Length: 298
Image (cartoon, rainbow, N blue to C red; front, side):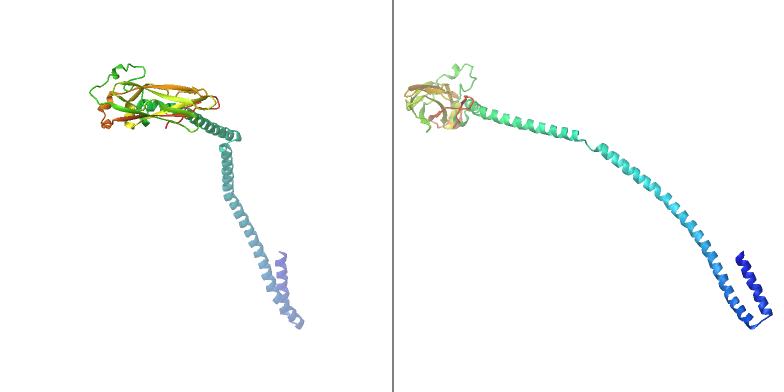
């Protein structure tokens, strides 16, 4: 209002100057007339700027509030989701006790299998020679003679001990050898015998301890040709048994055997006229517990 009154006074004064136009008044009137539009424009600019600032402020405040409203749900959602993920991760992560229990179970399993493997290896090493001997004696594999071919050990083998007089006699020769570490002399007392299939025969070997100490020896044997081994059945033998000889002692060792008549029906035995029984003596060995270790079968 004061600005409007001032502008009104300025207008009245300008009218009076126009009524009495003196030189000084003219100059003052021109000056006032020139300044009046400036005041009017400046007041208009001030009012418009104030109105514009208020509207901008209101608009800016509304926009900022709207932005906060729009952003706050996402922030809350992200915060809640991160909290839920952290809670789930804490629930899913195993504790140290669970980890220790898991590795303890794994270690126990590995230890169990390792001990089983060691025990199995030891048992196999101790049982390999007797098992091999039993298989060879049963099947004649590897040139090993069999016990009572065609029947069990406890069965009656008298039916097998019937000489086949219509067959040709087979020559059985005997060989003997001694390992280098055993100071023995070991020889067969007969070079050969001739037997019929089903006929029993008795042969002898002689062993002499030429050392100055008592020594225990053990013998292994084989039969050649190999296809005859299943039919070479021994009734009594000194093989795979500990033979103790005192220093300078000499002993006779018998072998009681027969050739099974079934060899006549085997096509692989056609043309076989000579069979050789081989014996080899080794020095007996013992483990740390004093148990006898059978020698490897040749």
